[in-house]
Length: 265
Ligand SMILES: [Zn+2]
Figure 1 (cartoon, rainbow, N blue to C red):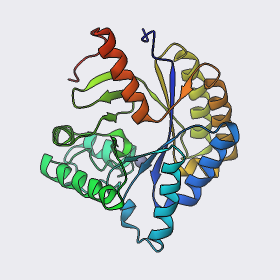
Figure 2: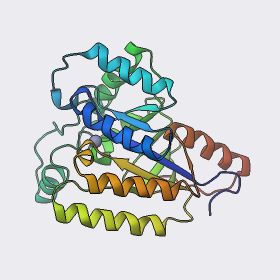
Figure 3: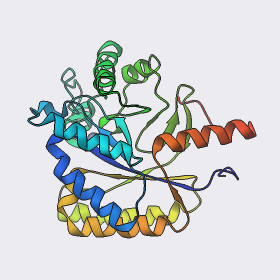
Figure 4: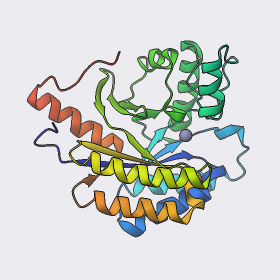
């Protein structure tokens, strides 16, 4: 049951924001703006795939502009690459190398390495004087070490593919993220259909999350689909950044002091 005071919410985020992906990210942001001028959460990767950055000053200015427009910048890993030890079992191999295509940076890190990467990421924000409230692990994969490391930082929220967590208490809310596949035509068509279905099923959910990836910008049918989805969702929901959502959501829980939340396993 959604809280009575908390309006049904929509959080739109753009993943994998980096100088290398910025042209596609900009196209996604433009496509969102064509539907409505809503605040968006940009999931920023400071050293995305170790790509060299040629015009850092220009990129910083662009992100600063987004901040001044009311968008949020959240930390989305440091390199976005799973650089941990080689997976030892078949299942580990499948999840880390095939399912996430080796992008689950925080899926298998020990607590010390996770802490180190979070620290680097936060220093990157701090160096620019930018606020950061949220951490979203690449591919939404948080291993035990990463969860443990998060306790040492002042993040207000994190998310997995299916849940939104308020930190540090780990109050959580079921909120599957709607995402598009970009791997092949069949996958893209299936994900469009799947997202339409989810959208109907989540009609009464407190929060609907829509996560867009740079590659989505290459496919006009994906862009048209998420534009329609946003338009539809905005008829009954208020769009906000994840940082705004967590603030409102936690306040509404505290106001009612109701045990609607649970501690993560
Ligand atoms: Zn990502």
